[in-house]
Every structure is written in C-alpha cells, then in structure tokens.
Amino acid sequence: VYNFAAGPAVMPVPVVNQIQKELPSLNGSGMSIMEISHRSAQFDEILQTAKQDLRDLMAIPDDYAILFFQGGGTGQFAAAPLNMATKHHRIAVLDSGQWATRARDEAANLGVTADTVGSSLADHYHHLPHLAAPLAKDTYDYLHITTNNTIEGTAYRDLPNANGTPLIGDMSSNILAQRYRVEDFAEIFAGAQKNLGPAGVTLVIVKKALVHHLAGLPSMLDYDLFIKKDSLYNTPPVFAIYALGLTLKWAKDQGGVDALQARDEQKAAKLYAFLDQSKLFHNLVKPEDRSLTNVPFVTGDAKLDQAAVDAAAKAGLMNLKGHRSVGGLRASLYNAMPEAGVDALIDFLHDFEQHH
Ligand code: PLP
Image (cartoon, rainbow, N blue to C red; front, side):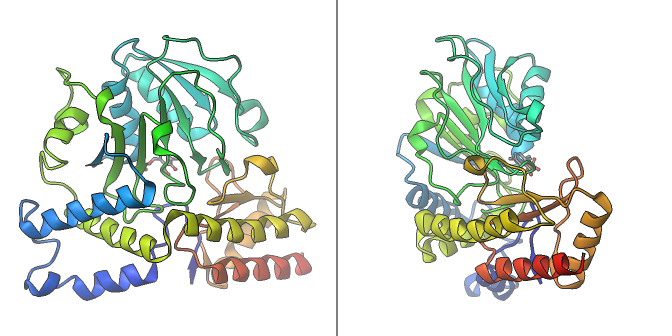
C-alpha cells in the first residue's frame, strides 16, 4: 500500500527493514535497542551520530544546540515560551492555521501575552498570513511561525521579515523537505513523526546564546538543563532516537535536503498539476503558498469526498481523509513517499473522476 497519512507517517522502506533486522540484537550485542542503557557507549554513539548527521543535513552552525525532548510539537508549544519569552513576556504569532493557533493559545495559557500579528483565518487559511504592520522593535521575545501548515496545506518559502525580532519555527511537517537557513531562526522545533522517524522524540535546534538558566521550569521542558545534560537528564526515548538516526542516514544516502526537496517538488508539482486540471477535485490554496508535503483537496461534496477516500483505501491508497476539522481529502507527500505512490494516486483520482 501507499500510506498518505499526515503523521505518524510513512517511513523509508530500508529504515523499517533495518529496524526489523536489528531489533532482536543491536550490532551482535545480544540485546535489543529497546533494552540497552541510555548511558551505554552504544547509545552514546547513536546519539552523537544523529546530532552530527542533522548538523550536516541542515547545515546547523556550532552555536546552535541540538536537543531531543519528549512531549511532541505540543510540548514545545509550552517549552518555547517558557524558555524564550523571558524578557518581554510577549510573543507575536502569525496565525497560519490550527497549529499556530494552538501554539498561541498554549503560550497565553502560561501567562505570556501572545499577539496575533497577521492571520488568514478569514480566508480559511487558504493563503499564508502577512504581517499586518511591521513588528514593533524590542517588544516581542520572538515571532512564532509554522513553516508548513499540515492541515491547511501551506508553507513558507520566504520567511516573514521579523524586523530584528527572533524567529521561532515549528517545522514539524516540512523539516528535511525544504531548505531553510538555520541562522534565520532563534529556534526550530519538530515532532519526529513525519520526516524524522517515529513518534516519541521531538527535535529542538536552538541558538545557545539565547538560552539562559531559569528558575522554576519543569525539568522536562528546560532547554538550559537539556543543553548541560546533552538531552540525557532522564531516560530519553531510546528507540525513537535510534530510528531517527537511521532515517537521517537514509536522508543522507538520498543526497541530503536539497535532493529530497527537488524530489518533493517534483512529486507535489505532479499532484497539483492534476488537481488544477481536474473537473472534480480542487486544491483551494493560493498557488505560491502551496505546501510540498501536505496537499488537501475537495470535490465540494462531503459524501463524494468520503466515497473517494473509501475507494482509494480499497485500491491500497491509505489515509487520504482530510483533517477532521476541514474534511475533504489530504495527501501527505513526505520524503519517504516514492514518486510511484503519487503516480498511483493520480491514476486513481483520474479514474474516480471518470466514473463520477
Ligand atoms: N505542529 C505541527 C505543524 C503539526 O503538524 C503537529 C502535528 O501534526 C503538531 C505541531 C503537534 O505535534 P505533536 O502531535 O507531536 O504534539
């Protein structure tokens, strides 16, 4: 089957095969990765290699720390304001969709003032929001953006001009799918379960100079503590980090981020070209703002959408149902989705259209 789920999402076949092969005994040790100590030399090598591979893939400068947390992207909706909104206690949020809204509401929930400085809600998020006015200087601890909007199917190619305010990017759904300059961000975070590996580990890349020792933070969300302990303050998600490491090796074997992006662009272009000429299926997103990784589309008739989802599943094209809040269909085309999967999807949609 081809799995178009938005997350947890398709993993590269060679990675799943390697996990299967190594699961009973890691490197002849007679022990499974699930059984070895996070303080062992074996795990240390896995951790350090994963960090170095990420540095290579994303060109992460040395003055940025690479940290692994639990708690998902949602955990970072809390951790980011707790660690990074400590001067003004005020952040700016570009409201590009539901995950941006969640981040804003979580910050507000923690007592940080979270100003919406641009929103495309009125247009059902069919385009990216722009800053309503230039950001006031020395007012906000950071500007929060969602680089790829998993539900709405938009993504930033050019970053907003934050006017000197640090930028934090939730890159959960297009990390390693699109090239961004890490230096343009104060922090990037991403749940692993789309392009980095299985759920259970969350990546944080943060500029060290902006992280301070703070009293009163929960240890599990404390960036300074996790930098000092190299993400080993407590038991990390050992298996998830191991699988993330294998996924990074695979990404390198594919030629790295630029090669993956070129392939993702090719896959997405094919699907958008089909949708743009289809008389039945439509993608409503403004073309310049379209995501490479999440492609939502509708027929305009909820029953027909559901019939298409069901018929697709029978044809081995899985998990095409749109997010429950927006309905319709959504094809997620992460790095591990082969072009043949997109071809099969287009053939199916074309055929469905002929019969409806
Ligand atoms: N941010 C984005 C862009 C997402 O797509 C998701 C989940 O799909 C999240 C945050 C929430 O992540 P998690 O489920 O890991 O908490």
